[in-house]
Length: 496
Image (cartoon, rainbow, N blue to C red; front, side):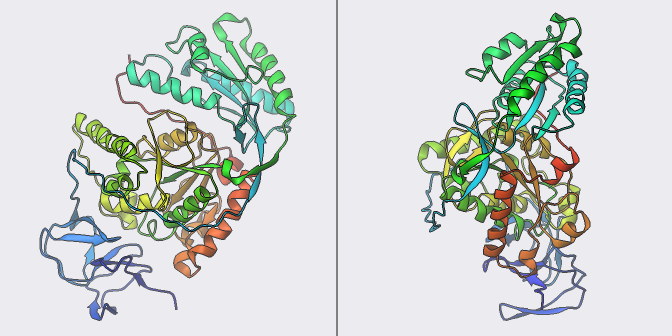
């Protein structure tokens, strides 16, 4: 018989309904008889004890907030009666956790593209990247023109990536735009790139070219539209040459240690911290044990679980960087007059998540139990293998773009509500529940809901790993099949 509820940690004073539970249903939990006082929707919490006003609500073994009123055993515990404990900037003390993971080396491989600089891509695509939003239309017309000429064959995709920026920006915003566009040009999933500028923008093409540093000039071309006659004709000449070179690339066997994955969640629900996020955690630990790399971002959704990550830092220097990662983002919130513990979205609440701490404790499970080996500012590229933390907000497209930009080949995106979007690398959707996978097969690529349905997480991870390898070797995920590919760049300042 399917389990009707789950007490995730023995210390928890709430349990999660696995299915819709009617008022009056009785359970015996920890030798205590509990009668539900209200209907409890699937994914939501009910009280395992009587709560006094102000008493901490415990889930995952940690406080997720406090009761705002007295509640009875068997009551529905939700955002109407739980409030965050989060406050402003905090002082932290390094209390390192000993990490010991016994995961065997299995010497698995995938079929990838080895680039001239030694990096590896899992796609071989032609990208058209504007330095400024003024030339977005030209970029899109050129992409469509090359697709028609080639019938979409010879490379994995031909894509333009329009954006709003590259001019009328100052300070960090201007630098963020340059960094993200640089990271895209240098990304190994691109077999060839045409960079298109206008000529009078802040993000000057010649300056941007220097900003790239060392790049393959045989595979990256530039066009400044104010300096040519017919920009479409000139652009197509450049693209034909780039396409001819990229279309000769072939896949070869690459060790799994070369794979870099981004870890992201969105549209979370009460099952996210039970199924899909723990699945990504098991996979992340496995990949790191094979010598690979995973990256966790969404800094605001670390609030409330940050000490778990801090104490897994390999050394005190990384701990200090993680403290800055957290407190710098809190200062960003406070500087705009916003609370650091803002409640989750309406979709999160409807799915059973009541506070930011509850979301964070579920979110951070995506990175498993490995040591933190690196901390990255927004827009910076990966420098170390293992687990890294990346500075970016929780917004799905902004954070996913940041993960791809730091060098991840693929974004693994868990969701309990569903979403169709994709960034400029494959964006794989992993559902937290089977109903979503059944209802949205055109969005969901892998169903982690089978874990709560009875399949062991180890068996699910085995199937998941096999699927990841197929995708890394060329199998398309849904966002690629549908052509849902976009970028979004983090903006914090004024627009001129």
